[in-house]
Amino acid sequence: MYNEIEVKKAFLGVKKDILLLKEEIEFLKSVILEKKPQNEEKEQSSIGNKGVVNRHFSRTFPGLFQDFSTINQVKNDIKYIDNETERFIKLLTDREYSIFIVVYQLEEEMGRQVMYKDISKRLITSQRTVNFHINNLILKGAPINKEIISGKVLISIRKEFKDLKILDKILASRNLNDHQIKLSDIFFNN
Image 1 (tube, rainbow, N blue to C red):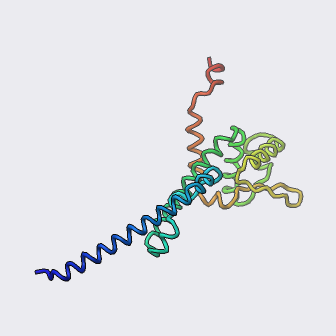
Image 2 (cartoon, rainbow, N blue to C red; image 1 turned 90 degrees about the vertical axis):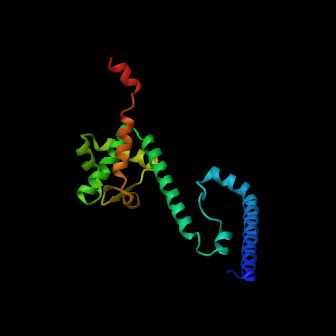
Image 3 (cartoon, rainbow, N blue to C red; image 1 turned 135 degrees about the horizontal axis):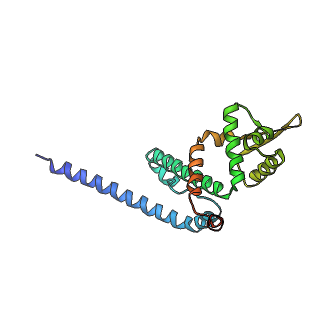
């Protein structure tokens, strides 16, 4: 049935492969232990590279885990964007939020950058108020571009942010927060 010598050779080959894998695992452990103090310092100041395959391992088995590391990186990026968007929305006052949403919507409707007067007409408020809140939004890190061309201030949402197509998610996120009971509701509605 089976040639005993060939079976022994096959098992020896498997044994060699297992030993090589053990060596590779030990090497990876040592690299991880060396890098661990550095990674702990970096985590405090950045999101890190969670899910990214170690480069030494990728060189040993080229291309084997490239797709997985890319997928993990994309997942991490999406989580980061979700968290940052959620954090940003929570930082906004009601007026800042409404101005941000109106800029987003008007720009899509009009197909161009919007001016203070466009925003103030939609929200029935003064251009000075719009200017004040746009500046606050920019200070809070909102993805807003503000340009002055021929004495006119033009406002737009950054293309990179619009490409994410998360307006519906922003609206839903804020609506969830609107269902929360506020302290002022308790005092003024009774």
